[in-house]
Length: 341
Image (cartoon, rainbow, N blue to C red; front, top):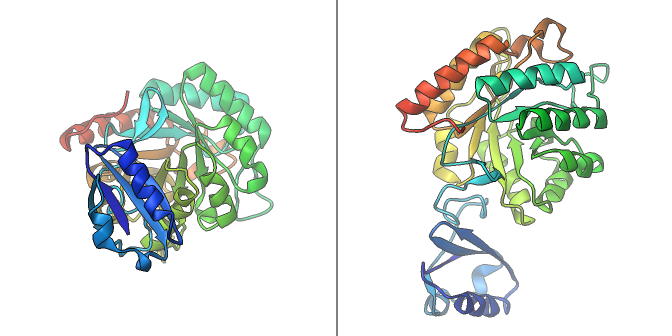
């Protein structure tokens, strides 16, 4: 159930409603929005008299939410969320955002080379993994803290904010110290202790969809972060497991973009690199993502993919990324949007 406050409600009216709701075994969450404030009621709402609540000063309406993902739902917040990354960059209904960089931070020289290249081409954020969840325990696992320090150095030189992955609660505080956006990988989508800890941070989080997760499971994982008080959540579609891995690593589910837009106020980023696993598919699927209504893309770029310690076959060369940026600008303009920066 949600309580929708009038657009001109007073703070004391909001507090009076909250004081009234405190009599019931529920958890009221105030969700401020553009032009509208709602109170999302979590718990046993059956005892609440909707008629009496609706009659209180400052209350516009009382609505029951049928969906299990309460805080992520459009019913709670009908306007799209805009997640502030820096004072000059937000992700959401404004301009298209492009995140680019290597799959893994391999060395200072490698990361700085690629960071300079993607910055020059027009990328808005630098991606790079310092902690790498790999299918094989014998594969490169990342440089850890050293990798985070290299990302910080690249940010200082290029001015690009950094997105990097946190794998567990043990290293979360360390990652949060260096990252502008904390990424939750597909394998960690249902790492509920990690999600809860992320919910207690005041830091943007990009949550990737699990490789076999339904849309509802995806949004319920986002709900774990939101329920702890962190409203800075970005969704990321990165492809779901398919049966045809000869030609594509995963099935990039672009259906998810309009579906999520119809269900949730949270912004959605597309990862065509992991979604396809093939370099020649990354650019066309990036453009299709923008046309479908995504708020941005995250792509892997490497200037020496044959030497990459992870995911070389899906990394764009810098020249290819530059061409992709030109295409993204064209498609963005065609759908009435701009590219950030």
